[in-house]
Image (cartoon, rainbow, N blue to C red):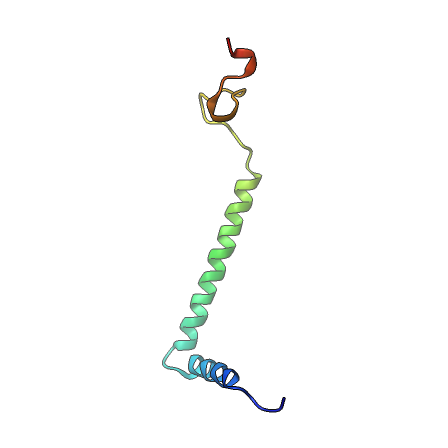
Length: 77
């Protein structure tokens, strides 16, 4: 239990490469991460607005139509 396996060393090396890998590497990674969070929040906000908006049928649509545009039972001849 005391030693580190090859996977532990690979993870440590990957973290070190991200932190010290080159000019502006960490700042670009964090910038991309921040853009992803902003996009996620924006998407969640849009979903909440769509869910809270009243469902309005398109103009010309009958309010009593059934599935796939069938006529209601009382309209059938």
